[in-house]
Image (cartoon, rainbow, N blue to C red; front, side):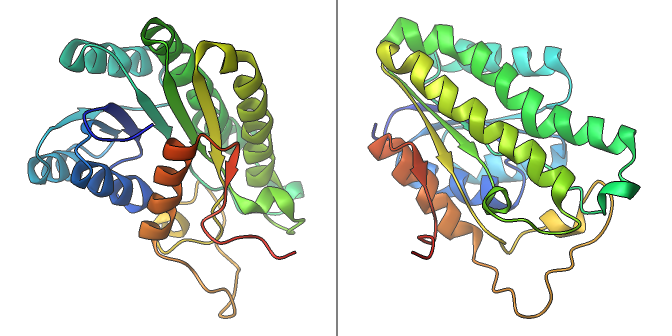
Length: 232
């Protein structure tokens, strides 16, 4: 699917990967709905883009997800692309994981993408086509002490994406998973709990690289897209 003229919802759009993809999609001629909690930053971004609606949205609240999709459908007549990018980290040893923190991260990293997909699928099915991109994490391909709770939520998203891809393929809806590694964003400054312990040897890649991977996923419909190809 090409982005030009398509209606695109981007969650977590106020900074980082979401902002980088919103700018890329705008250059390609997409019609955007930008969703995040930070109203001021979201509205400032939307004002810079030619056709973008800023929607202050807490993705942990199901009713706000429904309102986000309804607003997109009202403004653009439907939804062609959904980019589930919003997420939060939880980087503490398993014995120290607080249930409240884990619940909050599960709600954002797993429940929210599922609810957003459920909301857009009828609209995409009516059009006979659609693209859904879920932003995962390469931590699911490794065992990293202190990251187990977070990577478990992303592992759940991996399985959710694969199953959704199988269930909706006959409707012309391609579900893809983009798998970034450490990215130079505010992510590690906004963890639910804990701190990033990657050390100086970790080379973070720019969010624009992940944005390009999201575009590639939309254009190809591939099941998985890596901003940097994994080592053989």
